[in-house]
Image (cartoon, rainbow, N blue to C red):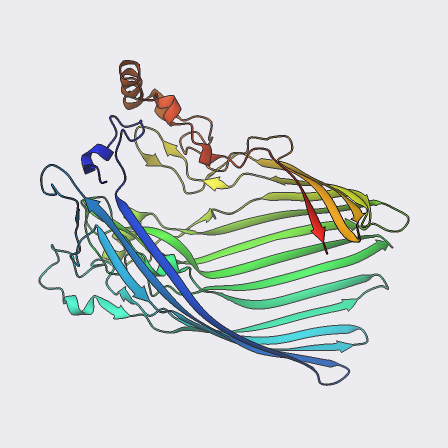
Length: 478
């Protein structure tokens, strides 16, 4: 059943695995018990009060291991179950989440005011590393002067109180100005909290990765100011400016602890901000018009701090505050445009086109051959465009409602690049094909049947969004 570990290696750098299996096993189960209670009361003509609580108790069971088999140490398939083994990981965690809120909606002749307060808390039920230069007590080379018993500590309860305010008031019989201000609390993903929670420490297979059970929640303060205006009975627009201030932004930090050793850890970077403007235009279908149109456009700039791994090490060693360089966040999309055009008659027939356009997301360019990364997120990936089609026709059949539909996703079969090679900024080609290792692969490909060329290796289907997809079907309503 299990092939030798060395059989899972490739014959050269840029070819597929030549045979055997990847003998890793991975099992994960999450059990969640959730309770929620909400109440709404119209206590007077001017006040509608809402309140509620929510409790969630999770249980995460995780096991991963590798079956070892070779011609030297592991003649028979072996699972190394030792506590310090980098090939075995097992844990059970029971995080607990609680939230409560209260809100009062006050309605007056020329003013609507929403005032609310929310409380959030979570307990991760895990330990975290207290010493950035000694991230694991299992390091065999740790200094005898370091007290290993103090390198880990229980992560404290994280909690926050979040006020929120919303105001809207008319300026004409068809126009409304709206403003909102609020604090928001975002719990870190479990994967960030519990990666390598047993603090296994080995540089044999590269730099180790540690989760961080002491991650703070992302805290966001948002401001919005907008105008909603009805132009005609079936035509209206909304324009809104927004600003978001994000503290304790989650990031993946490389940390250098010596000249030869670095490790990776999930951390809270200090700050990011998102600012922009959205515009939407809506034309509804009416009894006089079978056409409907929606259009929305967003311009935004999302920036955050970045710290170089080597500078991070030197600044920690000297006690200096690290210099934080503003960079574009990985999800910063400067321009997005979405639109729909639909034509049809109510429940009889409808045809719709849904279009999307988005400028490219940032990436960090790489100088091929020297493995030098330039400024973080200083270049952009290609833009993405897409058009979908939905057509449907309804019939009455023996007292039942039958609807036949046609859905075409990516109508024009556009090749949208989702991921890219960082040396070119494109998914379609990479400069690695001109390197010596790739040329060696091509020579082997010519000599050995079944070994693919380097060019074939670099064709990555997962780098692209899905191609055209056509669905034809029907629905029957009783």
